[in-house]
Length: 338
Image 1 (spheres, rainbow, N blue to C red):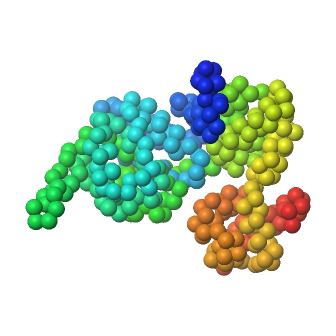
Image 2: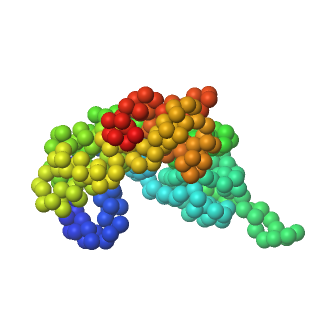
Image 3: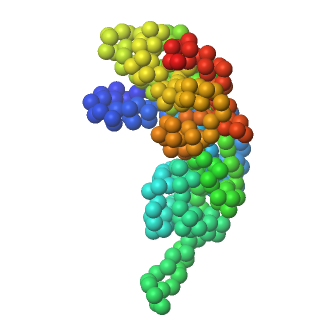
């Protein structure tokens, strides 16, 4: 089990927003055994990476997709460690010019793992440069301008591209076809989330009652990142009250502070359901109508709000529109939100 470097922890503890980033890095799994959940993906990756190592080659390129917080970046780092390679991370929106990508690719070391987050936001010119890099291990660049301009080709060392996205449907077919394997990250099981909470509490040397673990696990939206965030905030509440252990009451107080309920619904989730129940009287509501009623972008509703609500059975998508279920109505009544 990974141990906290006490000196480093104290050094970072007074640096505001940097503390959470440091704690997140401490909690990040460093081995396959530490990485809880996504068993099918781990099994597939172990076969691919093991075979590549036997051939003394870089792994085929990989595409990871799924909701935020499910461990895509963490698994990319484990891929690099398994291949004994460096991991280079960029976010697609930062690759605004062809020269940005060309500079990164031309400086890759042999066998390096190149991780692109938010891959659905890769621009078309960047994507076209990637094609030749993935297909031929070369990139073509134009040197000069006008009639004297000429194209030169740079050979690239073997490398593995790992791309991650929350919206795989926005990845073009030509780009998708260039990945050797595409893995879908599922929501975690409740037992897996509780195991992650226990592991994180042990790493952070936090004592927590079993009832508190169950409560956080239920509200964690089947997502490790959310589970760890709630655990850290419950730790804050406990420390402010000079409590030595996180109790059920501590967690409930944390939820109240964060304006979430025991199902993990946040204010925007409840507002969406309330709008569907009250404004649309339970009738199907189109995405454009919901967007206007909530003052939110359609993409935010579809990508951020809906997946979890659908997962827990509080919202259905039908051919006529979105419908809040009877389970959602009952829950909001119980919690006195409607």
